Length: 423
Ligand SMILES: Cc1ncc(COP(=O)(O)O)c(C=O)c1O
Image 1 (cartoon, helix red, strand yellow):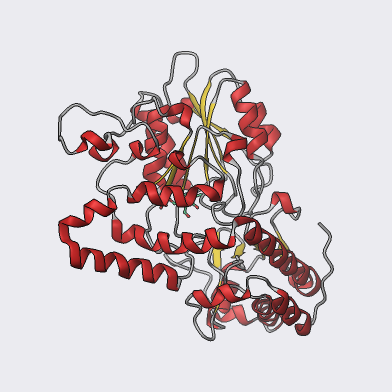
Image 2: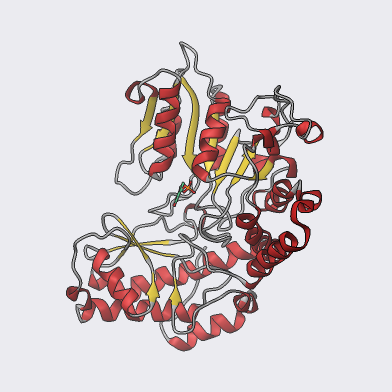
């Protein structure tokens, strides 16, 4: 969509004034004097999340073991609250495990290699943990990753071509795992097109939604993937290491979990404690062990905000604020070696901007010195996520002014280029 912007501060203030989400910012802990642009790595804490966590503490304090009476279905309740974000049936979603564990769970459940169909299709730009999990899953089935993991390669290190993915769907592919939004370049893959193509070829497909959930609306009743997994600590702001999401399509409820545990047993017989596993036939049947209530409670708080605001409003603001950032980059920063590395079309970019610069690493350090929090991704990417719920247009304006100042005055030079563990 074409949008008209201006380069002056007054224009940024005008956008803030007109922002329908401007009051939501007050529900988040935005640190005075700091501009937080890293909500796509670890979302900021909210008052709603804090209240839900303290409430959980209170329940524990007052009820002890009796808390199970009210919380036995808590993972499913949070799944129900998450379902609108992807327009899934509520019984298809559960909050459990971590992204990586949930990949293991879904793949070990659905990957049933035969002599003819034994490969798992992936791309070479996904986050490494997905690859580690896939490689270990094929090994568990007696294959070598070099023979059984088929990798669609990016042509430019930034983007994956959907046609290349579809071309790679040969008769020996059993299952596919892809990211919905690429963590570095912010590219959005066309889930509907790719999922349909996979199903036409008799291949199962799952999506890693880590960079998509809470950033872009999705419609799983329409796309009908086989499974999906996501973390809740990025756009969903549920806290460091918060419990992840798992979607299992209803058509697979009949499958037995690859990684069974007593929390996947049928609710009504779980406490009979029998040694024969009876699978609960909905997404909660893919839980493994006891749910971690204290790590889940903040999600209840933030999901309240997401369901109140709705993904459509969130996406509308996200598209506008990222378009504004790209405009300012083009107008003010392009001459200093900065370049937009993400796709520009609305339908093709996620919630963050991928800003490239040869000195990206040192520029990130200089930004932090100026109290602006970005994150760096090898080899040359400054990831910037103006989050719809709590970032302002004025913050984006100041960010660009600071990036200009860092480049013009070579402020990055005082920092070492040597990589440290956490940037
Ligand atoms: C696409 C993607 N998948 C998985 C993960 C991490 O997995 P886990 O939540 O199990 O640590 C990340 C982390 O940034 C990610 O970006």
